[in-house]
Image 1 (cartoon, rainbow, N blue to C red):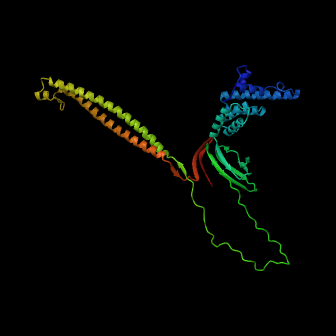
Image 2 (cartoon, rainbow, N blue to C red):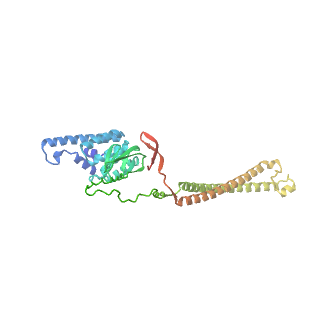
Length: 389
């Protein structure tokens, strides 16, 4: 984030170390080292201009106008190359979507011995590079490496080259004067290898030695051993490298099975409890109906001795018997649901166990030489094809 310590120092608030250093950097030259009047006046004017642009950048950043803040900090840093201005410039580049510039300025800050906010710069550099692609360029030592017509140094390069996602052209001029070029497509967060081999060495046969008239060469020189007509063809063995991986499908099956098992057993418990409650209601209503029938003198003796609701013995028992039937149906339905979810829970356990075993066992495959992947960048989007060729 943009630091306002310098502004708070100028307003008389409590100053932090970075603000105090920035204030000293922006102080007139006449306060630090005695100089001639003209040089001190020039330095004072530069410091005032740098301070003014710095304050404008802070104000623009607070308003969310990161593009204007970036322009202000860029001008301030051109006038006064202080690490605090550099860190604010990097942050505004990151916020305004200038990720390549942000990575460059964060990296420069990390290599500045006066910068005391290394942790902030490290996080900012990681955020910027997550939006960029990276080219791992390998070429014969001493080769000049060009990226999109811009020189990035001579091989071997110290690190990967950060690039905006999209199409790029890498051109190298080998030490022997020959050139080679490759076109690559890189996506955000991708490390794309780019390999250049040394040019083949051409052996020039020696010129014919001068002849000596006194010792002319023999008319019929001794025969040499000609190469065989059919040289043996021993191509290199085709043993492509393999890579080890764990199946993501197995992991997904394991997680899904675990979720299914937990849900199944929870619902089993819910419906088992509901079944128990419905059964209690069924027994209670049945006992009440049986007691009423035994004491009902209007009913035949055989029904009073054996109470029943199938069918109801009279219209008086129609509603109580209907309630009894409803409770019996609820018991059956809840029992069926509990049993079904118990089976689902068991199947979930089996799926989870099988999925995690599948995921845990390492598998081997031959890496493809080409890869098609989607990529998205500010104002751009599409598919990228990358591979070795």
